[in-house]
Image 1 (tube, one colour):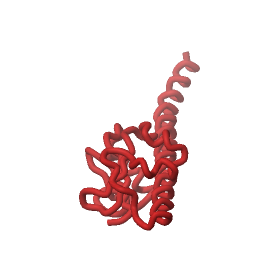
Image 2 (cartoon, rainbow, N blue to C red):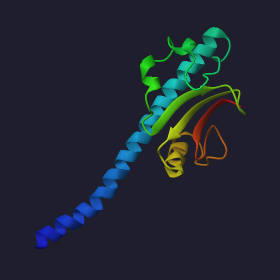
Image 3 (cartoon, one colour):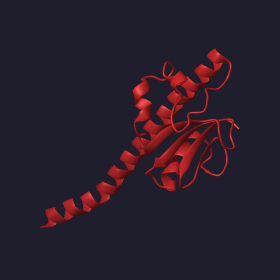
Length: 137
């Protein structure tokens, strides 16, 4: 009986830790993919002398030769949602994630890895509808 109780206590302690490790892995994977996408966009800008055209809800076809592998960027991100390249709205150039399933708390954790942990300012921003990585304000 004592062994069963001890196993139950250990499981109760281990499950939240395991979930947090999984969340941290997803956040780190997301940050790495964000860096790959950003480097691809910047390489395009250096080659062409300007940012890629607006993605109109996705990636512009001109980016296909710059994104490794190009089909990856039409799949959901590691934390959910879809990648979007944008030159619209308030920023000259930004990489966005639309429809992420993660809470703002997870977005804040990603922001801590990239910026200052505050989703209202800096290069990584977020709200209930999207996350935005600003390449040029």
